[in-house]
Length: 338
Figure 1 (cartoon, rainbow, N blue to C red):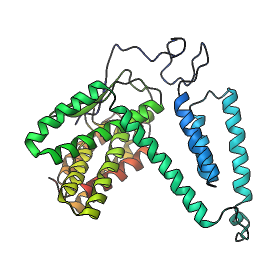
Figure 2: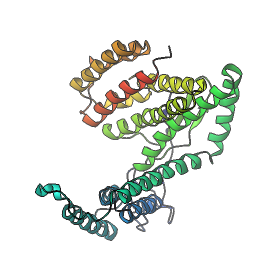
Figure 3: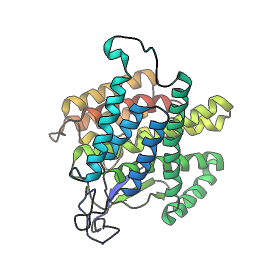
Figure 4: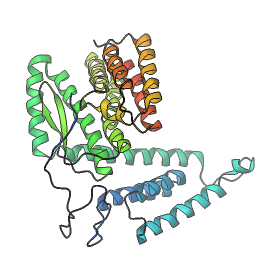
């Protein structure tokens, strides 16, 4: 399944307010100052405030820290959020008796309220992801190509497995889209192609290998989430089709980790230096011994070929850890397939 392609000849994004052409990673219009990610910032602010009200100050602080990457460093909004983060840090330190080696004598919030707040914050985060997935279906090219893809595989596998396959691939592709939006990189809507899977056409190629790796590996990460959700439903309901969907999802996403051509694994591998690539090969070998998943042989052979090439990446510990974790989880999830 080919996930991302760069579409040459496309114009970069333009400011929604004045139409000025924006740089690839711009967070504000250089002409009128309009924020590129204003809607995302509103969502983050709502989550941060919900976490603060619930007493989850650390989560609120992390949300505000996330917001900083979508603001110009010299803007008033950036300075205001810096002040909020400093205030939250002061409150967190004051309420953390472990730093002084003492047990809390009078916590600000009882345990049940903190647990309820954590659940509420998690629900808000999940709701945001669901809203994002639903909005993706408003694109006509995505919706109708998905229907055509579903019709083809309905005839081959029956509608339950075809529906599960379509949804899991869609979630995978929206993982790419979410990170593309994060970095302000223009891209088309996911397009489904029977026999291939789906792809997202980029309007420009990321120049940074670390950014490219994060974009590539986001698809398998979201795909893994879809597979894990399916296997949990199977454990609860014991309906076999859910296990089949989970295993097939794991198989497809693991295939995408093959570091070749424009597959997701190639984007992740591109950022790794030789020792990190060897570490990934070791993880593939261990996963094969534990799961006997034959697809890992293909992934491993291509990984060895990439590791001995002169071309090496700058090194990326985050991408290495993500790659290894995905190999472990997806090989376990896919072990009933192939």
